[in-house]
Image (tube, rainbow, N blue to C red):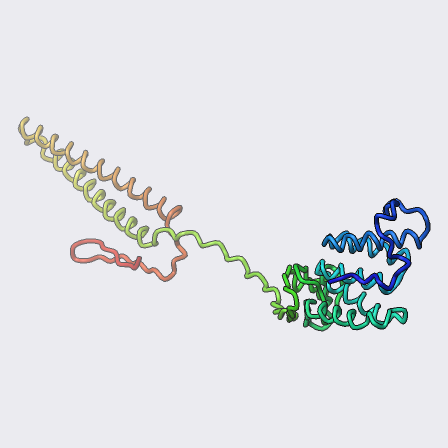
Length: 307
């Protein structure tokens, strides 16, 4: 692609004939613009597209002209900056100072740039705001090929935040809608569970059993005491007629019965104390469903109940 310079004869001086460099120009806008334009032509000829674009931009700012703008657009197309190049091509076509025989070439370059522009269509929820490379856009955005950062915000919430890569001429449509919000009312916390009741104590049946055992042992103790007393009375009544040997035997038997009575008396006291302690401190008297009863059978005292 050649750069257009034949129509600017006033600017077409050879670089060798201009020892003053454009960067050091202090001779007015017209001279400096000419030097920038010549530097841009040289950079474009050697395919230094970025330098060419910079020089053409400087020349356009110093001495605007549609031909300079056209060359700037050509350099931008080489840098794949098609969106900016399109804007410049359109300005060149709309400028009445543009040479008529340049218009077909401008239109051709503009059509080629349009084919290379990527298109990003953002279909967002009503009220959402879309940004491409942090610039607000509405609906369709024309971008250069390459990576672009897309962000969509609605009511302060980010619906989309993504970096996309588009190829030359690619068209990409993004549909971004408001996510469905499910409102769940807060649930009241359940009331705390009551602490578990203390484990129940022994059934009252055990107290009744203890009382029954105490009564039985007490009854045996009373019988033993009466039997000992009766043996002592018999010993005193029969003593005048007893021999020494018989008297000693009676005394030994009386001591045995006395010892038996004392042991039974101690057992009665222990069972009575144990039963009392069981009833006062251990037995669960609130267990109303449990029943216990004592009965006197043909073989002795018994108890019935449900544990």
